[in-house]
Amino acid sequence: MIRDFTDLLIWQKAIEAGQKIYDLTRSFPADERFGLTAQVRRAGVSISSNIAEGHARQGKEFAHFISIARGSLAETESQLLFAVAIGYLPPEPVMEYRTLAGEIHRMCSSLVEKLKTN
Image 1 (cartoon, rainbow, N blue to C red):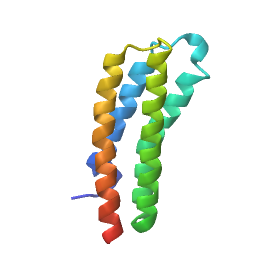
Image 2 (image 1 turned 120 degrees about the vertical axis):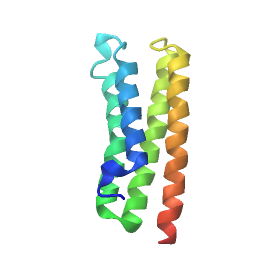
Image 3 (image 1 turned 180 degrees about the vertical axis):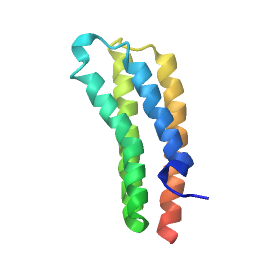
């Protein structure tokens, strides 16, 4: 039974992704606090936020917010890959994040398709 957005598995996975982003960015240099660290964290938090906001709106608007969440998901992946490229992170934990992001992306796609048929 879905009572509110916190019951959605996709939202729960998005929270997990946000937590991983915070864990990964803790090792970034202090001078990145207002740069890459803030940017990737904002994008990570917006994934679950857009799912929650979309659920409150329902229908076609929900699908739109899921699409925005999917964009934020891609943004975080790109930013974390950039962090690997510049030596802030090793590749292994980012690949683990990308596995979770792929799962969330597939869930987003499935949910959008389901919302389009309603």
